[in-house]
Length: 285
Image: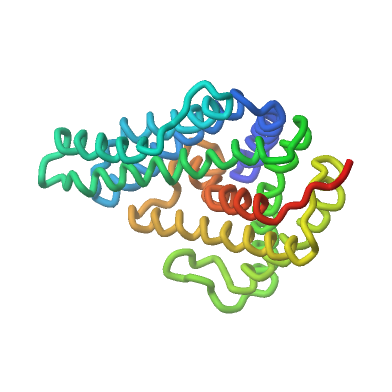
């Protein structure tokens, strides 16, 4: 089976499942995010090992998986996470590294990478859950639409960057990290994202979620999401370069690893959440 055929089959199976879980939300979405966070953390720690680091992978993977579930439990009012919780997690990780890593294995570095992996995966992905339970959202359809906003803009950026970059070519964006990306592709991705944002607001965000952005705010949000999505892709490419690996793993046939699929979304979810909370306007029903 060709690489393209595998990609298409996986997309046809995975996309409807993801869309359904986003529609359902609540525990189902938190569980999906937890599973993806754990897999992404596992891949990140594999890359770190390949680069010569020794993170405490079991601790980081479990923490990344649990974090979205804690966010869900707090949303339901079942738990209340104290302000001191991050500090306690930091201290616990350092102590665990002290006992499990010898001085030659750089326990402080192991602690730092372990904590980074939790924040980079479970922490950033949890903003998808926050978007699903966004302020002013009423009903499953509205919540799903808000999550779909950064998703579609990220995909639109990827598609626009690919086709414009291929058609126009020109100066490389960051050849030392990602030789295939061009400045023209990056600009094309931004322009396509702005167009998709305008269409999405007109035909989904306003009529379904009863939310809107003023024209200049809409353009600004679309540009910001497109740019940070491309930065997220470059960051993961840089991490893989440091570990001298081509893909984060081979978990997804035809697509590489979980991090390879989520690298841009790790950046666009939190940025979209912050900008929408700041700029979005409820539309009268």
